[in-house]
Amino acid sequence: MALLPLTADARNIADLFASEPGRIFPLLTRTMRLDMVDYHNSGQTVTLQNNLAGESGLLELDNTYLKLNASGSKVVEMCMWTDGRKDTVIAVIETVMTPLPDSRLTLWNAQWQPFYTDRLFKMPVIDDFIVKKMPRELRADLQDAMIFPLIQLTVKGDDHRTIEATHTLDRFLAPSEYERFADYLKPSLTYRYNGNKIKRVK
Image (cartoon, rainbow, N blue to C red; front, top):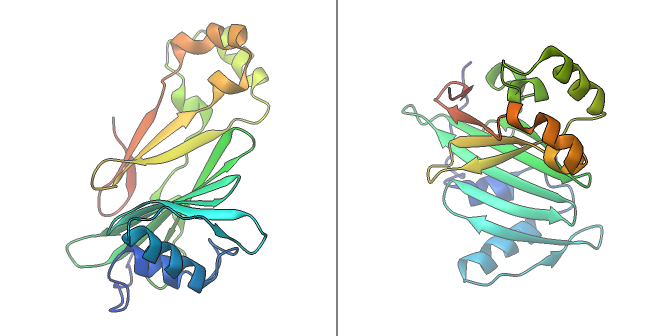
């Protein structure tokens, strides 16, 4: 897939944060976002009132990554990925507390036009966490217990190109119920952006 080049106005993740047209940050005006960046760069941890009278604030920020409390129930992580041709991909992870964390990942270019995310990243499902040796009967019991499986995504690593996926079954199920399945579940899955796709690390 051809990626559009990074515009001259967007030099880092803060520029992209400010230019986002409101699909990701509908509660934050451009002025609010610029204020957040200014406060963070001056060493201040400040929360601002968003358009629904809730509180929003930057948690982490560097040249290619930011983490933001968008509201009391939503956290957003943004990464700016470039390859040798200076093409740019913006990866956005939105995690909503339901009350357990549930994430979705979307991919954009520097002009905030969406990519076909499902072609570049396959969102994990609970079956991906199950080891092959789980007995068939136990697997069936787990599927019956999963009313609505929730999976959390988190950016990892100094270069912010690694994504960790974790399930929330240990918090969704009663402790005694979870113990039946725990030995047959991988605690996490790791994915890595390789310049073309976000692929699972085996």
